[in-house]
Image (cartoon, rainbow, N blue to C red; front, side, top):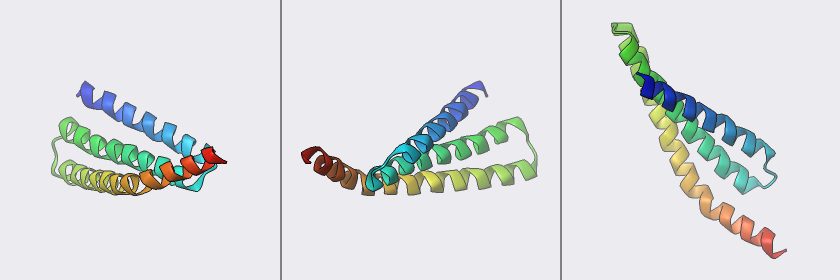
Length: 101
């Protein structure tokens, strides 16, 4: 499916973008917050890759491997969302403190 391929490429691009951005960040809370966004993008990449495999090959082994990819990807998205929600207020507070100095 071409639509899945486009979303796979976009999610991997966002993962690379956020990973580079987190390495370049000097503030610890902001680094964790951006890393959580990278985790969400990587989870989407893995889950979408699993869904794409289901459409490409119709074997029992493919269904099993794709299901594992989808579950791991969705768990990564879930963990990334939890981390994003946790670190967002901390990163905002850190940025406000840095602006007041």
